[in-house]
Length: 79
Image (cartoon, rainbow, N blue to C red; front, side, top):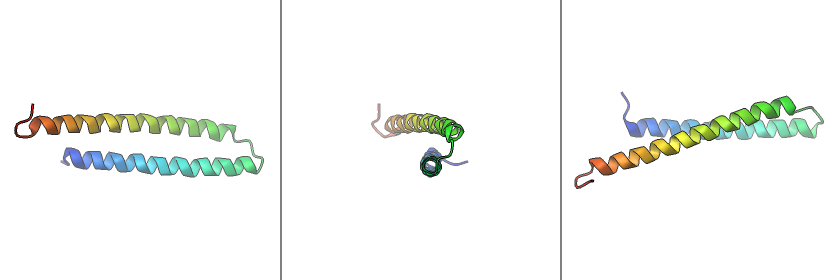
């Protein structure tokens, strides 16, 4: 079973991948927009993806803070 640092590193990679995917989709939607296509359905999906990414980022930040607090507690001389 992977340790907490491995899990956090993997979650961080997933968030970074999500950021890249969203940036790519934003570029695609912008290109379609420039070509005069109706992008409203794509923008709706993109907004959902962006909200999902924000939730993942919030969860990752919470998990990182939890891991930091735990590390302090298990250190010799910790709380």
